[in-house]
Amino acid sequence: MRKINLFGASGHAKVIIDIIENNGFDVGQIFDDNSDINSFIGRNVVSIYSKELLDINTTIISIGDNRTRKKIYENLEIKLEKPLIHPSAIVSSNSVIGKGTVIMPNAVVNAGTIIGKNCIINSGAIVEHDCILKDYVHISPSAALAGGVNIGEGAHVGIGAVIIQCVEIGEWSIIGAGAVVSKSLPANCTAVGIPAKPIKFH
Ligand SMILES: CC(=O)SCCNC(=O)CCNC(=O)[C@H](O)C(C)(C)COP(=O)(O)OP(=O)(O)OC[C@H]1O[C@@H](n2cnc3c(N)ncnc32)[C@H](O)[C@@H]1OP(=O)(O)O
Image (cartoon, rainbow, N blue to C red; front, side, top):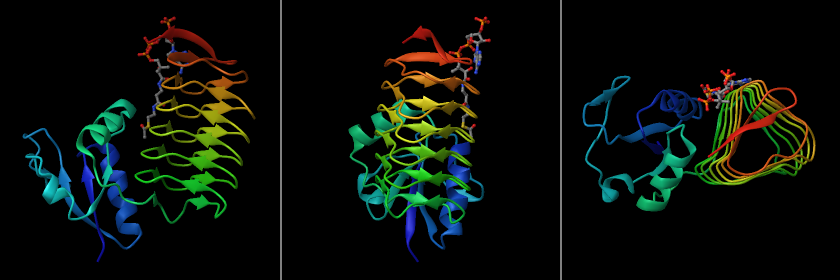
């Protein structure tokens, strides 16, 4: 049976284990650098990093923080798993999804959309047609992107946020929970409200 490693024993990893099992695959190694975590929902956790051990299988970086996923991928040259898609998600055959990206239960990814690597399309999120999502993006549960939306690297769209068509979100920006984004937003900002406006830059 095909095995998939997890890098990070987090709450996010619990949902990914469900997706692995629902696809009929099995969990391989679970790695976490916190040596206090010896087991994770009944499974053994390895805390001493070994590239040889991890490279036996492909891996999903199961950490919710976008910058941490990027740091781990770039520093450790993780051998990424193909996109991991929950069977209840609807993903167009005319979309392109990068390695290490996870598509959670009931998410929708429509035709013409291109999603980079190590992204999270969380439960019930909708990514409409012809969107472009760069690497390390996280679309939170129930967020909705209309057609032709562009999301820069590492941006985080908060839970229940709505982004209207053809809007651009700059890299590493954070869109607050429940925001309505009606105009493009710059890089490295946190934007909240209806309509969404930047409240700070980082
Ligand atoms: C499966 C999962 O769990 S996936 C994860 C899903 N989680 C999310 O989507 C969380 C999204 N995060 C948020 O909405 C956060 O509140 C953020 C990122 C927008 C802001 O967080 P912080 O940077 O810590 O800012 P902070 O909490 O200090 O808030 C700053 C101000 O913005 C306001 N604010 C914060 N979030 C929001 C929001 N979503 N909508 C409107 N106003 C908001 C605060 O009330 C505060 O206002 P004040 O200065 O008048 O008191």
